[in-house]
Structure formats: C-alpha cells, structure tokens
Length: 144
Length: 422
Image (cartoon, rainbow over all chains, first blue to last red; front, side, top):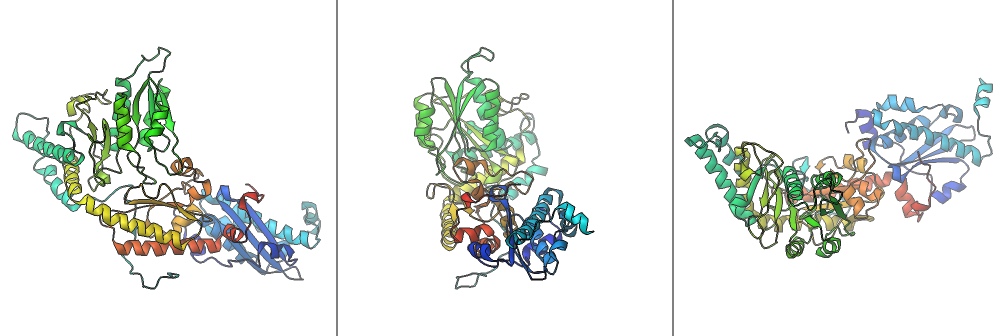
C-alpha cells in the first residue's frame, strides 16, 4: 500500500507508545481511563490510555496498537492530540480530522473510526471510574 | 539492532529478493542463448520449405531434448505451452473430457476427479469448472503438516475415478507430497495421474517414469528461464495418454496445442533446464542450509512463531513462518527491504487470509501474519544473515506496540476477552 509521508512517519516513529501499568493495575487506577477497541480477528486492536489531572485536563496519553500501518498512525496521532486537552474538548476529536491530517486512503478510513472510538471509550472509562455522569447529547447542548 | 548477535551484520544491496517461488530472474546464460532467435534465427518452425524455418525448428528440437533430459522423458513427450497455468488447464480439462465415463446431460456423473484443497488456483479453478459441467471432484484436505499421502488418495478413489491431480510440492509452504507412491497407486488402477511440478522441476531431480507420472506441468520462469513459456509432459507409452486440446488450429505440438511456437521462449526454457541439470543439486544443498539457518535462528530468537508445514519433507528453498501478535500489513511494512510474500491479502479491502494456511489449520491470526521466504540461485549468506536480523527486529518492534502481546505475557487468554467487534 502506498502511504503518505505522515503515516510513514508515525508508523516508523510512533509517539507515546506504552501503558500506565499492567491490565490489572490499570483497572485499579482512578486517574487513568482506558479504551480498548477492535478485535484480533478483524486485524486491529487499539488500546488508548489517558491520565487525567484533578483539573480534568489530560496530562499524558499512551497507546498500543495491533494493526496495519494506518491503525498505528491513527492511534499515535490521537495520543499527540489528547495531551493537554480538557476531557470535554478531547471528546470533540472526530475521525474525519484524523483522516485529513494523515491523508488516510479510503480503504483505511475505518482505522480513524477506531481511533475515535478508542478516545471515547477511554474518556467514558475515566468518567465511570470517578462517578462522573456520562455526557449525553442533551447535556452538551445545555452547556452551549 | 541485533539483540544478541555478537558479529556485526554486513548490509547487502537492498532490497533483498526472497520471492523466488513467485518468479526467478533469467539466468544470463539463458538470455544469451535466446538472443539470436529474436533477430537472425527468427523463422517459423512450421515453415518447412526454407532454412529460416529449419533453423528455428532445430532450436526448438534442441530445447525439447534439454527439457526431456532434465525430467528423464522422451523428447516427443514434451509439449510447449505458455506456462504452468496453461499446462494445468490442458492436462486437467483435456484428460477429463477425453476420459469421461458418461455423456454430458445423461444425468450420471461424467467422471470423478481427485485433487487437493491446497493446490494452486491454476489447478483448483479448472477442477471447479469441470464440477459445474457435470464431473464430481473430491478436494482432499491435508493434515497440519500439509502433505498429501497415497493413503489419502486411496481412501478417496471410486470406480468412476478418471483423474488424480496432486501437486509435487506446495507453492506457499514448500512441503513435498508423496508423488511416486500416488503415481504407483494410480497406475495400478489405470487412472490418469497429473502433477503440477512448477515449484519442483529444475530444483529437484525428476524422473517421470520412475515416479509413474502421466502428465506433469512446469514453467520456465520458476527455473531461471523466461516468463510466458512452460511445458507439459504427456506420457506416450504404458499408457499413451490422450488429451482433448483446448486450442485448435494449425496442429502444432502434435495437435495438443495449436499456435506458432514461442521459439525464443522455448530456447530459453531449454537452456534453463540444461543449466538446472548441472547446478540444481549443489544449489539445493546450499539453499537448504541457508533456509534451515533462517528457520532455526528466527524460531529460536522469537517466541510464538512457527514454521508452517512439515519441517523436513519440504523443498530446500521455500519456508513459511507465522508470527503471533503482529498484524500482516504492518509486518510487511516493517520488512520492506525484504521482497517476500505475505499470507495476508489485507493490503486490499479483503480480510481473507491464505486459503492454504487456513486449510492446514493455521488460525486466521497466524495466517495473516505469515511470511513466505523463498531463496534462489544468487541468494547469499549475507542476505540471509541480514534478513534474519531485520525480521527478528521487525517482529520485536511490532510486539512492543501490540496490546495483544502484553496481554499474552500477562497470562490473559485472548480468546476469552470480549472484543468490541466493529
């Protein structure tokens, strides 16, 4: 597959690879939210972790991905974008933004969808661990 | 980069070609033999009235002898074709229609054919077409080692079996089938026996009579000859095999294959066979050692990886290795300096992995992340050493990135995880 330079760069030099602990440790940590999406049979599994400060700002983000070059690049880019963002702002990251930034080919759009799913799953996990009510579209509308 | 190698690894010219099972470069000696036939000896061997035709015919006759010497047949038994795909089609379709037991439309099966589920598509598809046209076909399912035995064929034989077609050695995993034994079995039952020997001829000694082969396909470009030329051995005695031709016309090649002969290609195929006869045994020993070194060092330095197919009964130059917890496309990207084949078709939108690996019980995950590495006449020790280091480093890098490998190390059973399918 002919990939653009940004995908190749993220694939060859992935940012923020890692984990804030073992699966068991992560489950216990209230300051970390985890999103694990995809399935091995489908050829991609993404694990995205966010470490959130008391002020609701994402201090650090890490990923591990089993998948194609686009899946690795999409999740690597997601961690860059997540760092320093407030949770509510992080939830606004859309797959189309990832497609545009990386110039993903059409057959690889699903990789960006998976990255968006992973972001939401990590935010929801953090909120659930900390008893924060999941934000509904109605809440979001009320805030504006 | 080498994690535990003590000697520095010399970097050879990149990329490294380890896809000789797909095609081989033409040997320069083959090209040299072909050149005069493009310009000065350009005649049509069918032109019987002048020396242009005679000279071209001499070139073809010489090539026919060179091929016959390599496979130990009579030269009259060699039919030139456009390659192994055509040879397979001519052999399978030509024999099935010639030897059919019941007429088309009689309501009875026209005849029974035995093949194998992991044959090349150029055998499977002609068999499937015959199936649609009223023949019955049994596709044998080989066990985990990938080898088709005479016992398996014997168990599938029927009174109306007219043709058995089993490849000599598998193109994806390199394992060698029990061809002499299957040939003997077919001979004892008067059943026509065809073998697709595309990966075998020119690499391993061939003796069509000793192995009781009736029909055998082979190709020029797999044995350092040109593309677009191949051959079919058609036995002429005990029994004299007859075939219904696929192409009618000028009656060339004893009527089996009409059409003006590809003289340059045929001359090249002949020369390639002559060279193979002289060099293949030394090549086989050298490449067998290199392949074994590759398999042993990769499997000893990485956990959760496997060589697919029988470890001993295989061609010297082909190996197929699967790596757990890495994904096929990213693996190919990581070893981009090594030109090889992948068991995964997922560079396209399709998620279907290799049917050969699937059929011998390799799980989808391991089939996707498999590499077929095939060595050739000019593969060097340095290229293999370098490839070993690159592959080990690539798999380690991707495993450092893989959440599945972490889970595996933590003792989590991945088959028990509830995955969010998408």
